[in-house]
Length: 300
Ligand SMILES: CC(=O)SCCNC(=O)CCNC(=O)[C@H](O)C(C)(C)COP(=O)(O)OP(=O)(O)OC[C@H]1O[C@@H](n2cnc3c(N)ncnc32)[C@H](O)[C@@H]1OP(=O)(O)O
Ligand SMILES: O=C([O-])CC(=O)C(=O)O
Ligand SMILES: [Mg+2]
Figure 1 (tube, helix red, strand yellow):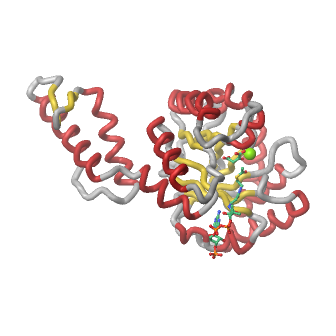
Figure 2 (cartoon, rainbow, N blue to C red; figure 1 turned 45 degrees about the horizontal axis):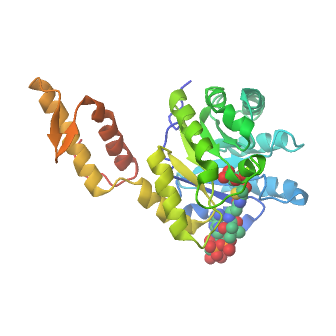
Figure 3 (cartoon, rainbow, N blue to C red; figure 1 turned 90 degrees about the vertical axis):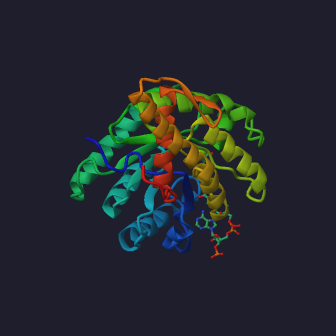
């Protein structure tokens, strides 16, 4: 099974609380690549049923205008997750985010419930995608097995709040406590051919610190970031969208490699930088990201 949306653009994945009907009505207006409607930690235990009901109504009745609808279900150690899944599939969610994922067995349990619900509500089998949040040392240690646990898996996301609790440290704002997890997760995701997303930044008014963190994770290779507030969207998009300078350089690299190959030349320079075939895929990736982000005006 290969799903057309498995690798779509997911620079910004914005959480919103499914408990508040006002929040989930028209949030696509903010322009995040994906919306993550939360049934888990943003929803008080006393409001789980009402949140699920308002989520179902929103999935059924709101036109999200192409914005991907991810739902974070409750954890597998709760009494809620099975009903969450039925409600998501009945409503037509695009992706389910599994919180606190520790191993492939947990993904398989969700996959079984999703397939049963797709049959029950007559949705195409395999149409619902999955992603897994890793929120513990054990989860991060299992990153590769989780990435390869299901054909439905789009990728893994670091969940720094719960993860640092498990590591017996805290979010410092410097990123030092998340370094090992980020490195291990991006390597696992790339080895498995799936996407990798960074954790939320909760220090809402510190937008400079946020920008630094986005730049760091972009340079590490991440595909995007979980976010919690519309103010964070333009920063993520600015950092993740290739600049005109990068686009023009990548075009030159692609064209020069194509033409030098015909002349039998393997290594040369572009704007004073050594280039050979090893740089081809990276340049193609910049152009693909520019196209997906809607900023490419060239002819490649
Ligand atoms: C550790 C974890 O588990 S993280 C995942 C769970 N957390 C969440 O889902 C939290 C999502 N975010 C939020 O609920 C809010 O942004 C808060 C509570 C953090 C801050 O709320 P506020 O102080 O109201 O933020 P702010 O003043 O920037 O809001 C501005 C506008 O954006 C809206 N807004 C804020 N956050 C969101 C959001 N995540 N999605 C959609 N709209 C939002 C507000 O409703 C407000 O709209 P209005 O001007 O029409 O009233
Ligand atoms: O997924 C996230 O980034 C939010 C979260 O649950 C956590 O930090 O524990
Ligand atoms: Mg968490």
